[in-house]
Length: 144
Image (cartoon, rainbow, N blue to C red; front, side, top):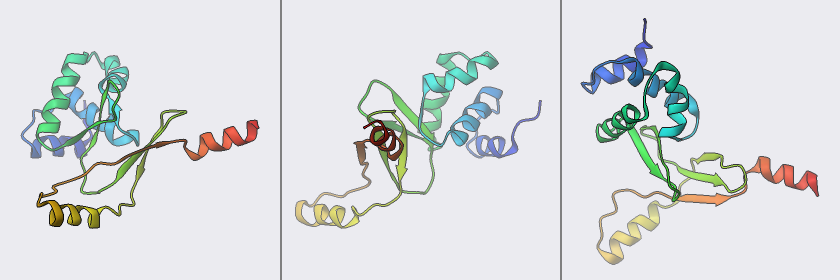
């Protein structure tokens, strides 16, 4: 079986053994367009005989190695996405649950102010916006 070389290379760069579940896990997250839970990933990987415990172990190791970001949206599930050098926040639709990346960030000045006024050193920040996405707003306006 041939694996996608992009993911094989990523795994090897981080000294991971190349296995089908690990390659597929990265492939799924890369193609998803939004952060996924272990259960979301398991829906696809279970077809390849991968159990949930294996997925959790891989996710944990990948987060520790800096390959993935682990995101907690305040519900019962952590979600995961490929780590990139991009900085963005998330918008979560209260109606459909869609998670959308928001690339605008104007919090650099606030971070500097916090450091200056309080003496803290800000290393990073995460902002989660909640509301109704444009698709759900459109559906609601058509219904009325």
